[in-house]
Image (tube, rainbow, N blue to C red; front, side):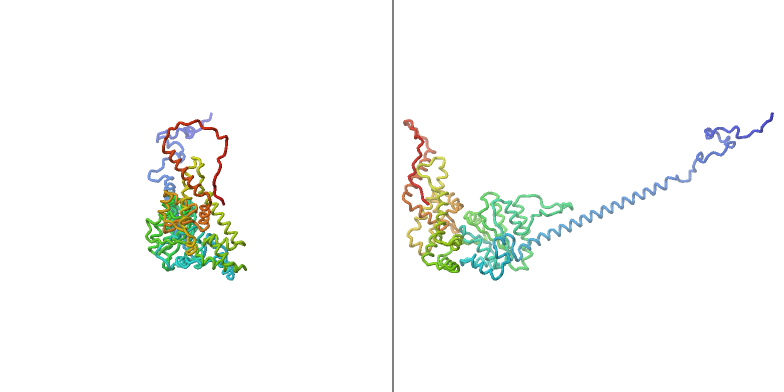
Length: 526
């Protein structure tokens, strides 16, 4: 049997046990794979170099992001600051443009065809038709609107229809609206706020988009604060324009009697007056108020220093008859003087009535219609019910009886007719005396409000117009008027006595009336 020689690998231990063998046995085994050897301690790990690269990349990305964020914030802040500056300048530029030469939409409507680019050859004809009665107050108004009269603010008072607005519009036309803003008052403060913004082209920051840049705009507030903001901006514009213009701006607020007599409206009137006082003293802005009622003067007088009051009265007879004759002559009608005198006796010098009469075919019939309308208005508002009135209408009848008593007093003050023919003025009663006549202090203002009487700036009470005075005269001249008035006053005294006293009476049970309607013994006629 053959014997094979011994080989070392015949007794080679399994590979899984090689790592557990002592060093003495390794010499007889084959070389182990590289994974079985420990790495040298003085060499770095293979993963340490990529870790440092990742840290440097992270640091670089953080720096880049921070730089981008910082640049974005700086750009946003610079954009917001630039927008805020641009917006504030734009607001002032818009207000300045509102006072430049020309007319706003409201002024165009008021001026009508004259402001709509009418042909120059036809403008004078339009003016002759619209402003055909010469006014003695027009030169004074022209001086105010042109900036010649300065250092004051003005309250223009007058009855309804005396031509206050026409005087202002004619003055505006002569200066082409340069430096003038005009608006109408309103009893709602929100509406007045909108109208003021429209007049001076101020939008109360409603178009402000500063919130996109995290810039807080003006907070929501009341109309009074918005009006104050608008006046602040207007003051800045006036300061900026004073050197270039050399004269103050003009702000016209028409019909301030439309403000309510409450806390909010009184606060608004106080704000406007304070600004008017400051601006007039510095020649910045001249404020012009117009009013039909006396209570606005009572509110303004206690704090007035630079205020000047104008009374716009009816046109005198000579001016009326001359202008009316010329106007009708252009229409081919030669009116005799007797007709002109009769027209003035019926409607007086009230411009609103004269415009109706001058353009009508039958002037006397138009005068009669106007008188009938005024008389109907007075009777509908203030007629007394006599001795058969119910106790439910006691308070209302006190008001009506006071109006009739005051009308009767004005008729008695008229006296002899020749006095009226000499000066052509309506009879007047001082305000304190009128209150004494009707024994009430609060009713006179209400009579002024419903256009029955008018209280002028001097505190004189008179009929609202010549037509209303004619109505007073006709009512008081009717047969049975005095008895009817006396019965009404007696009935009011009786009702007041019944409300204040308690009497005990023994009487028979009342009989039934059978549904009979009380007979009316007297009533006024139209």
